[in-house]
Length: 484
Image 1 (cartoon, rainbow, N blue to C red):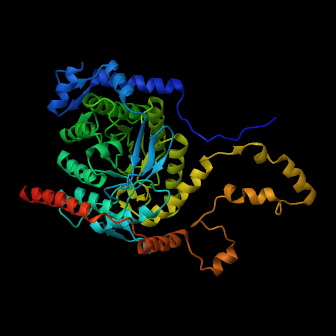
Image 2 (image 1 turned 45 degrees about the vertical axis):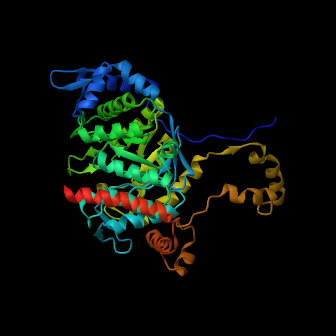
């Protein structure tokens, strides 16, 4: 019997079909009965016009039918393109992509483990590094530029990423005005609004304030993104035990309800506009008052939310490569690797915060390089085991048995490179060879690779005319900031 080649990609589920239904129904109950506080008159008018009810305590309740209509209208896949207009990601299904995060206050020195405050140069350095790493699919600022006016920081960070990388990016903005500046720059890069709509270059990240509050700026940016076809992530970050229930199921229900409310506002604005759901299910450690990214309760709530997004067939925002450790030690590598593996096998789509340390206070470029290799290894594993007659190798086994080995078998040579994954930083040498070659740690090897990339990699330059047009946009923004 002839077998076609097959490969079953490993998957992980943490919820049964009945569990998913109960979580979904509970989120619908929160929306229909508890409701949400909305501080945006246009959104309130739009919601009440669609059948939502404004309660006596100024909450908006949402009927089940409107939630389900919004879920049905949201696209199941979102194509993202780089600065050059080339396709890079098809966000949706169970496809997993990886990138850095934003808002770090400090970077960790790869040699000394000391910390230094981040600046605008930090944004450019991390973007240029990530531009060269094959398993980092998108970029974020990876820093707060502490050396410039905070009212200019988001736009200047966006520009630093544009100049230092061609990869798609996820951005943050304080308000609609900042977001519009980024959109204007992206229009220049793409050659017009129509082309930007066809080939989205950046994704905007926003979200509500838990519990159950949706401030003006968050809703205003959500509406802008729907109107301009800018893919938007609407991601609540309820903290279990603080701004959300302590129980994992209750934590997930609240986060899902908050996210679905954003979806309703978004799809009422423009049905079919690109929307990415998510939840940052931080856990308040009652012993330390720290919000953990890597507690088992975080991981369980996170994987449950990923499953809910898969069940709803809406692209999701996820996490990878992050640790609560303060320095790049064994805890750091274990936590970052475990989270990344879970994101792949659960089918999380757009996974950020690679290289984060210490509860999202600090980051390490060396850790980004290491996680690039870890992601590569996990992706190799996730390809599964190919099964066909050639792979099963029945005749080859008989021949190898007669020879006593398989070293000289043509079958071995044929499949060597395709089958074996080769590390770049992970050391597979014996102790004696490792000693002769300098006894280096993985952090030292990663530090050398960071230095090499930053010394040699140059992303494609921007055409002079487009750079001049972008400068006019950012100069106008700077003047508006100065007049405030």
